[in-house]
Length: 378
Image (cartoon, rainbow, N blue to C red; front, side, top):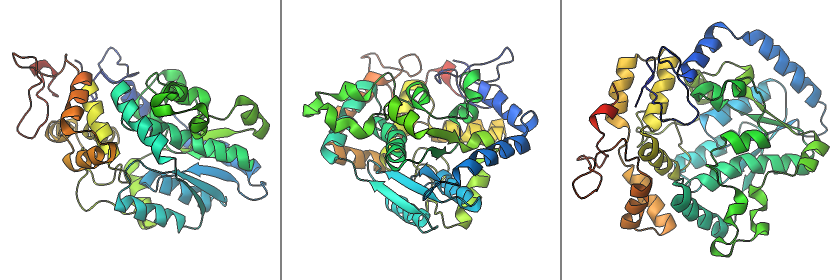
């Protein structure tokens, strides 16, 4: 297992590549952001694009929102630029109280908000099936947050969709994808975290029919072309810095947690849903890195902490089971703890974590899996 020599991201991250100096492409992207990209030119390009959409009769754009720091910032930015956005929120799996407050705060910035309340029976069946099938308890939610704003855009004849960061620029990915400012069907299928699973693969699960999946299917190409639908990453046109975005959003009423999030050392990530923390834990057992690694790598790239501090934070916080969130998830799904542990073991990376003589994965006193010596973050 190889870790980036600048940050602490391992080579087990899908679509992450290292150069001959052992530097990951997410760190190289940050160098491009700092020294190569002309952000003034990109801002001009963005302003010219949205100028054409200000002429829309009612709403100028659609913004997919959760109430988090990023979507709050997106709304603030569009309002400051004089646009009238229609916001769309796809209901979280297990909403939190702070998440509800932040969504209400976003609404009170002065925008109309459509809150999609999905069919709970169909959705829960997909949550359980995706957990069993691909080890991702947030799979249908990650699908819905991208497809539902597109459906609203098509039905309201609003051609402009505004998204936040470009994940390929911020977290690493194929070189060509970093120069792509658009989120469309192709991006969703390649980078949207579908894990080779499609919405139609859920047909037949607990009696699910194709008509039950309408919201989870991206609009037909014919509809997309009729409206001229275009989804733009704000992070392609404006230099993305999570801590500056956080401070801006806090000035406009965004609330952080009173304590750190269970899967990391920060108190501002994934505040809207308990299930997100279980998702981060499942990512850890599959790839050997979790939310603490994501946060630490971004902090290193942006110059807020040293790599040495990142190593300390990752080794302290990554991989600890999020017990409060897990209990909420078990209550929601009906899985027993024993059933969940069997699911976790089926996706746990045998190359990274130690097992005993009986083949069971070793666990530390805090419940985290014990890494093999060569896979410890250094």
